[in-house]
Length: 284
Length: 353
Image (tube, rainbow over all chains, first blue to last red; front, side):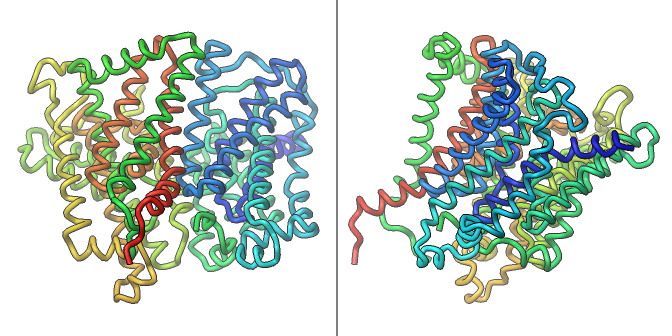
C-alpha cells in the first residue's frame, strides 16, 4: 500500500514543480507554454551537473540554473522585445529539445542517453529528497501569492497591469521575477526526473510540461486546486501502470484524461472566468 | 484599420533577413564547438540539398508538408487565432486519406479516387479544427490551450485505432491503400530516384493560390482578416465573431489535413504512426517567417525544409540537431524583431499629415 502511495507521489513530483512554475508565470500574465522546455532543461542540467561534480545537490542546482537560463530567454524575448508569448514558448521548447541533444552528443558522444547518474542513490521512498521539496512547491506558492507583498504584486500585474503601474509597481520587473521563478520551479521538477531515473535521455519529459499546464488550467490558476489536479492526473497514470497487462482500459485512453478534463473545464464558464485578466497581453 | 507608416517591404522582409543572419552566426559558433570548418559544413549542406536532384527532391517533399501546415497556421493567425493543433490535424488528414484509399476498390480510376482521398484528408483535418473553433465560438474557450490538449487527444486516439485495430502485424502502419496514390517525381524523371517528392507538391501550390484567393479576394476572407486586425471594429461592422472564428479554424484544419496526403498518398501509400515528424509545430515557424502571406509561407517552407534536409546531409560532421537549434533561433529572432522593426520603420519614415 505505501509503495503505491510513493509511486503515485513520484509520478506527481515533476507535475507539482512544473505546475507551480506555471501558476506563478500565468498569474503574472505570462503564458507558461515553456514548462516542457524548462523541465527538459532542468533534467539535462541536473544530469550533467551531477555527473560533472559527483554531487547530487550540485546537480539540482545546475538543473535549476539551466531552466532559469531558458526562462531568462523567455522573459527577454517577451518583455524586452515584446515578442509574442505563444510563438516564443513553442520556439524555446524546440530550442531546448535540439540544444540538449546537441550538447549530449558533444559531451558524451551519444544522441540518446547520458551515462548513469548515481544521484541520491536509492534515495528513500520518494526517490530523492527533492521529492519532498516538490510536494511543498505549490503550498509554498499559495503562501507567497496570498500572504506576501510580492504575491500581491504578481496578482496585480496579471490582473490589471495599468492599475499596478499607477500604484507605482514596475510591471516588467515583477514579470521578470515571476518568469525566472517559474523556470527555477520547473527546473527543480526536471532535476527530480533525471535523478529519479538516474540518467538524462533525449525528450525524457515526454509532454509532462503540457500535463502540468493542463493542471494549472484545470486547477483554475489556484495553487492548491492545481496541486489537486496534479495529484489527480498522477493518480490516473499510477493506476494505468498498475493495471497494465490486465487490459482493463487501453493506455491511450488513460493518457487522454488530463487533456479531456482540461478541455471540459475550459468549455464551462468556471474555467474561463478564472483566467488572469491580462494573461498573454504583455506585448500590448 | 490603420497600417503603420513606412515601406511595407521593409517591415515584411527585414525580420526574416535579420533572423537568417543571426542564425548563420549561431550556426558558425555551433560548428566551431565540434572543431569543424563552417565553410565546409555550409558547403556540404548546400550540396546535399540544392546540389543534386535527390537532395532537391527531398527538400521539395518536406516543403510540401510544411507549406500545408504553414498555410493552416497562417489562416488562423490572420483571424487572430493560434492553431497549435496542426500537428494532429496533419496526422488526422493522413489517416483520413489512408482510410479513403483503403475503402476504395482496387483499380478505381485516379480521376475519382484522388479527389475522394484529398477530400477525406481535408475533412478529417477540418473536423479536428472544428473542435477548437466550436468551443471558441460557443464558449469562448482559449484556442491555444484547446489545440494543445487536442494534439494529445487526437494522436492518442489515432495511435489506439492503428495499434489495436488497423495495423499490419509487427508494424505501426496500416495496410497499403488500394487506390488514390499519387505519382512520384522519380516516375517522371529518373534523377529523382530515391527521393520522396511527389505530385502533392502541385496540390501544395494549388493550396497557396487558393488560400491567397480566399484571404484577399473573397468577402469571407475580408471578414476573417478584419476580425484578426480588430475584433471589436469587425463586430461593429456586422461581422459575426463566432462564425468567423469557427470558419477560420475549420479552414485551417482542412489545410493542415491536406498535408497528410504528401506522406500517405504520395510517398508510403499507408498511414504510419508519427509520420508528421513535428511538421505541424514547424508550421507555426513557417507562418511566422512567411509573415502569414501564402506566398511567403511557400518560401519559408522551402527555407525550413532546406535546414531540415541539410541537417541530415551534415550529420556526419555536426549533429543534425544543430538544425533544430537554428530553426528555433530563426523563430525567436523573427518574433523578437517584428515589433522592433515596426517601431524603427515608423521612426525612419516621417508621418504624413
